[in-house]
Length: 235
Image 1 (tube, one colour):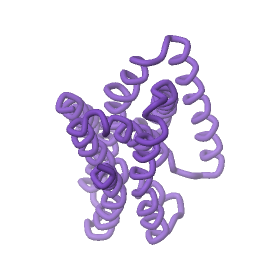
Image 2 (cartoon, rainbow, N blue to C red):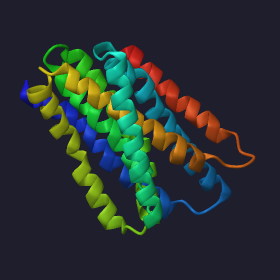
Image 3 (cartoon, rainbow, N blue to C red):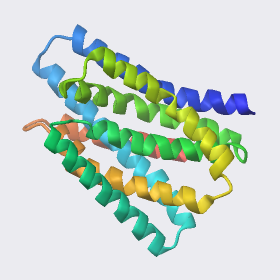
């Protein structure tokens, strides 16, 4: 049982590192061109769509099932305000870590949820692991490029992503052994993450993914959200 949980959450997490590797290959082996620029921004919007689907279809609905209206309002506003303050601090330092923050904000709570439901519904946990893994690929692809543009070396960025890959296992174990008996706390975490994610999406990710006189990027966001819908229906 424990081995299965580690394997499921490990798969969900390793795609963070795989996405970084793919981004590094794309940057170094595909020549700069308008097409490359459009592909990059389309992937950014695709990732934003997937993150939005995680918020709208998983995090908020699961939190609303457990919390009352005041609990939802409080946790959501705390998440939004806290990440506004973090984003302002990053902007002053010239950082571009918004995509990474958004990725971790949905990756960690969903991995905790994966661990919490594993003992009850193993089949659902397996599908959730696949869904989280698919989310992480475009999100980590975009995060890698943002960190490199912020001044991080490729080696340092890949090392960070390799370490973050294990957050899925750690979060799933926490959810399984510590939080499965505290559904209220898990729900507050999901709603808190939702507030932070929505702020980062509107403030940073969606505006950065837009290109003037190009329409494929907006379609990419729709496709990303559709992936989330399909994943939620399968789960």
